[in-house]
Length: 84
Image 1 (cartoon, rainbow, N blue to C red):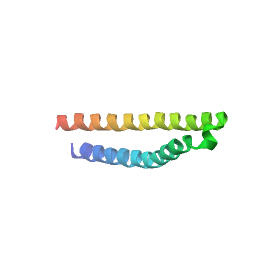
Image 2: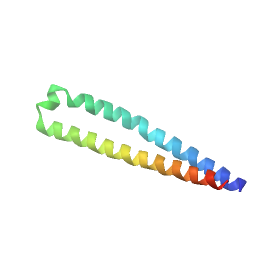
Image 3: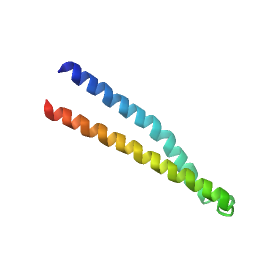
């Protein structure tokens, strides 16, 4: 039982660290791309505007996946605590 608890804690720490390492650069990408979306050079160029929107859309999609991983990890952690 103690080994299982240790492994669960290691898994939780890994997921928290991993998601943090993904979310930090992702936030920077979203901030920069949302800012650039409003710039005249991007607004006036349909191709650049489309590429910029792809960056925003895919970054949001990746963020949703990260949130799902966190949700699953929290749910599994709660289930484990309920068994104790």
